[in-house]
Image (cartoon, rainbow, N blue to C red; front, side, top):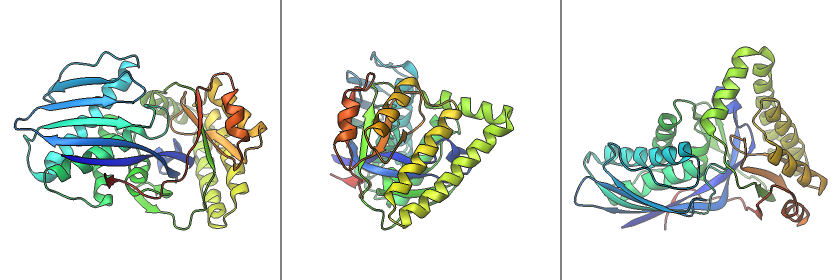
Length: 328
């Protein structure tokens, strides 16, 4: 039996634009997905999922089609979650050259499903790491990141970037621009506060919506380019340990993402509550449409304000996690 875990993430800047080759800077946070894997004597896959903002479910299937769990979340999210697990298993089988390997897997997570905190990337990264180790193969973090990206790329119909999976595998703050991925050294301790509206956006639908805008309007393409400019300014602010400048650029980024139609009433309400409470900056994180915002505030004022904001179901502090995928 092997247990691996991987962190979720928040975006300082760059979501959506990263799909079009612009840079992005996600940061790993100390909320993790843990995957326990035990090899079976047959080729079947039994998956038990817990704490994914679902009621929990168990499903057994061969990977050629099977039962869909009866849970109170959008069907697209459940199907995607199963697709991520299937993809991780196929990657492990490929690495070990054991195409008929079967597994019992348990997935546990502190990361809300579909909320913009990288739950799918964390699950895929942890599952690949645990399953390959269970089959006697140990991959580097970079190799796990690459194979996890292949899974997300497939499940998300070619719309995924390397940002989420690379950040989850490597930990800390990372910079991703196309296939160029690297860790950012000497990042200051950023005082993250996360607000969660209890919802989940449909990543595929939101990405497709941005693509349609980009194809229809030149200024939408310019907006995506402007997000890239924000990221580059943000990198300079991080290098200078200028947290105030980072916050201001996060505010800019949220405005640009809102212009692309990926924010929501609940996300905007939480962003403004955080800013009015004195946060240095606040923005949505992830695909949008619902889910989470991230703010920078050393004090308790933002978390307190979010707890009293209509539509916010939870608010919590999230420390930067400088460690990526690991064996538990």
